[in-house]
Length: 554
Image 1 (cartoon, helix red, strand yellow):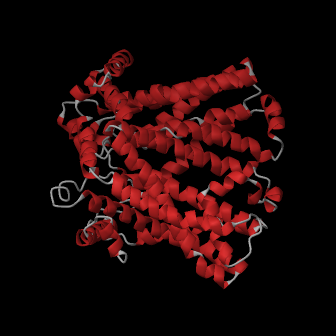
Image 2 (tube, helix red, strand yellow; image 1 turned 180 degrees about the vertical axis):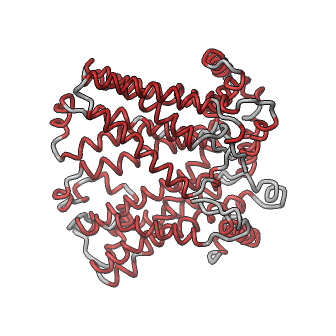
Image 3 (tube, rainbow, N blue to C red; image 1 turned 135 degrees about the vertical axis):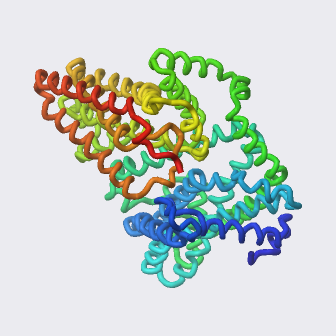
């Protein structure tokens, strides 16, 4: 609240702004920790979670000092450092803090009061800025110390200025794009675009994290010169790096002081444009977003949007693939909810890209040229690794098909005259297998057949049975719950550790056994028969689950 005069000039009420921020920060301290909620201390403040997050940010910041140490040219090292930092902040805003900007939970208290749209929006932007400060400050400490050691005390004193400008630039670029889309598009389309944009961005980051370091030549990076590329002078990270021309000579480019002007002016222009032109009617658009979410549960609204074909397909498959009405109900509910739940899509859809990216990463481990690895690939047994990696999609979908923010609606399961709750779970499992895993497995199989030939056919069939066996085993002993009936925070850290260990141990054991039998067809056939029998037994136990083995929702 120090620049109070600035907030007033932007049209905000400073007293209301202070009150809103005060309440938001208090609620942040009372929010349960992300690693699990302690039911015995409902009113406790989880302040240690904030410090734990700051420690993680500090550890992450150590990674970003490598450009400063490896690259000889100071301007090039600073440019790459600020590029990586700006990229991370943009990702954080897109993936985590967009929910704060479009949060609708405070509309019943704030919006009926005489609070202007500019005050309302500015409170959310500053709230996000405080979140970023908690992350950016510890993350920047390693780079701060490195720059101080390399370039002296003047650079240490100057370091906070470009860092603050970088935070403002990332904040208002992302928020400006969000608010512009919110004004130009319908609320329903906005949330849909936002979900797929976040999914795509997370895939890009995952691929860059695993593949870019392997493709990068460290020896060539040492002599990298950003001044040789004219396009870099139009990037915000170059402007921020040019600020250091005030205290030390940077010979990689000429006329560097000119580039300091956009580094300072851009954040100020962005905040003015965002609050002045994008803030009007922001509160009304937030209410419309909430109205769309409420209407999403209405069947009449869904049918009016042209989703009749989807519902008919789900009803047809539910009838044909399930005999019991309970299983048909579980199938239909899981099919429709997995298509509507934004949270489920965010957690599951990126996995379809993570598997091939990680497989390419494993191929690059040999340090040989990629074209040589590709030529030798058909003569190896690495297709078995790719087949069993497909279980990641299945496991992720099973882990989140039971989770919902509206978990209290699961009272309908206990209120209905259901004799076999396992039938509902079996119907939900079939949705995960048919809708997500099997099409993905078919694509992987087509790739393997094109590269390894028909001799890989028995491996495909054996891997399909083994991965399904593994998924049913996990569903039977760990995820034996009704679809969309649990709150995510009720999962304890110990159970998460057990799930992670089983998630790595079981498919690894099945894959190793499969790999050892890769040259013996008769052994594969015996393995296939045994896995099929075990799959039938575990599935029968899972589908006949009774009420005694089910714990109700919170």
